[in-house]
Amino acid sequence: MAKFKMTLEYDGARYAGWQLQKNDRSVQGELLDAAAKLFGNQPIEVYGAGRTDAGVHARGQVAHLDVAETRLSPDQIRIGLNDALPHDINILRVEKAHPKFHARHDARSRSYTYQISKRRDAFGKKYVWWVRDPLDIRAMRDAAARLEGFHDFRSFGATEKAGQSTLVDLDQVEIREEADRIYIHITGSHFLWKMVRRMVGVLVEVGRGRMNGQDVETFLKTESREPAKYTAPPSGLFLERIEY
Image 1 (cartoon, rainbow, N blue to C red):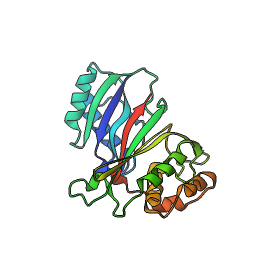
Image 2 (cartoon, rainbow, N blue to C red):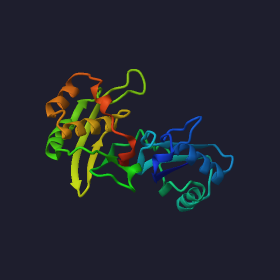
Image 3 (cartoon, helix red, strand yellow):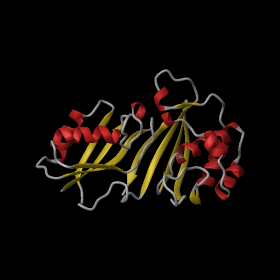
Image 4 (cartoon, rainbow, N blue to C red):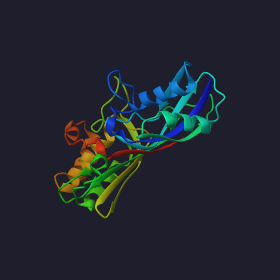
């Protein structure tokens, strides 16, 4: 069995997320189809480091590819897969990997960026969330700082299976403003389902003046379903980088 580490980018607008779907298109499904064309009828497996939701994009997703046997070089695999993939999925790099490497389990941290537009954008609707209200960036930064550290994020995420831990270590929640855009960059050990989008939604509510930093601390101390009401749309979310 040969194992390869792949770094890829994709526009998630046309897909039902990363994970393979029975009745819908997924990024993982497109990669498996492309690999089947390249390697024939050999057993093939593809696993991603992060299971992005429908409409979420990636600039630095990582996946590992298992194939029974191949004489192709990593660069030949990259070119062959890209030739078979649709235009909105692109393999950036392919590297030989250790036989025990696992894209998801071996990841030490994941980084996401959320893009907010302060104006109506004719070109970037698929890639931003247009927030019409003026936002208090200082208040948002104060609330973001309270999210950093090791906390129970059960109010911000949904678990995928019973008994799953909701404890997450957030290294950084950084907010920067450039012209008509606001970028929220979040790095953590891992993330619960919808956690990043709910955090962004709550931070926007703080920016609007409808919440404050103390409300954020309350959500971390006491379980609440309120953050779910403010879940940010998937269009502005990008998986930026996976660290190993």
